[in-house]
Length: 171
Length: 137
Image (cartoon, each protein chain N blue to C red):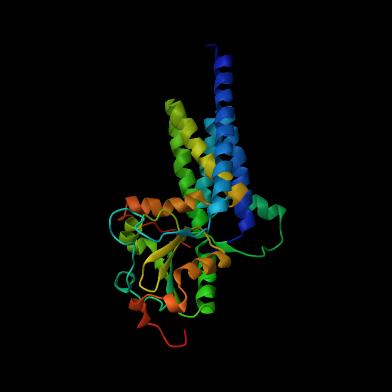
């Protein structure tokens, strides 16, 4: 190939690479914007390893909320973590018996691997006994979290026996 | 340290343009220049940011933590250097692939406000638990 044609060939390859990259980026961006903060249902044995997906107060290092716990995984190099912290703090202040726990992912890489957390923020909604019932990555909206909480906190009559003892009377 | 999100978005847009030009022209020199820009951005002195601040003098309504985007500039630098190695050594797939990866991240940041570079932090820590990364404020 003469040099001019070789150059043109490379330029055309470059144009295709640019177009393919921008198309891929648009796809990723649209999917991300749609999924970010969406709380997925995690009840049951999601990992399929026969174990319950559950976080206890011992593992977390702090007591669970009497009704539910919002667990947020954060890192220092995370843009939406701060906003997520505000949303979850608001929700835990709004809904009685709901605790908000923020975990520095770097200091708990054991949990990060076990739960296969790839992004921060990742938010887990735990029921009163620590079972992971909802999970979402990216910054959630307040409404998403409230809806997820409604699923985690069963109505008073049907609440499981095991958690009843921990719950204050006013609830 | 706080950053103006408009500056970050503008920088990402210019970076997208420059990296697209690198791919079309195949210019290693332009990629080298962008690598220098990434390095300056990692040091918190992005030339694109300086351009924006001379054009727009109004104060930002909100600011954000400067550490995540600075870390992302470091990730961009790593890809730019890999791309340069590809260009210089004549390994075309490496040159185009690494530049395209940096372009993808810059485009996602410019168009959607997503910081892919920031998200690689946890992935790197998962692979290299012993490594400690510190961007000084």
